[in-house]
Amino acid sequence: MILKYQQIKELIRIGSIKIDPFDEELQLQPSSIDLRTSDRFYRYPKEIEPELQILDPKNPYLNILEKDFISEQGIVIEPAKFLIIETLEYISVPENITVFLQPKFRLARMGLSLINAGWLEHGYEGNITLCLQNVNDFPVRIFKNMPVVHIFLSKTE
Image (cartoon, rainbow, N blue to C red):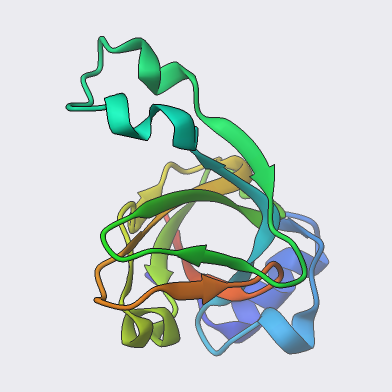
């Protein structure tokens, strides 16, 4: 059962669900919570891109993602490229709540796809790491603090 506005609001009020930072007016929707981009993102270093022919789980390149920060001007995701980004919000849900992720519709209209849309295990705690891919023919700019995903909460039994 997907939780509704009043149920979510009550669970946040009593501390069962923790979201930090959280702006109820801005983020709480009828049956979801909007999460925003932090200023942190990860990518493969540009200098090794020409060398990469294939990514393999045994390839050491998987361990050399570099961390960078989104400036006030945002960051551009070129066509066919992807970016790993963290949510601004740190969340914590109890053992009887699972979290479903869906991209904001405005991202889809720009051609950004959330590769890891799906769900998080019950009892999840942390910032959510998102993989965004630009499937458009045009570059897309994103900004820090931009609503990028909404989460739906469901009770598990």
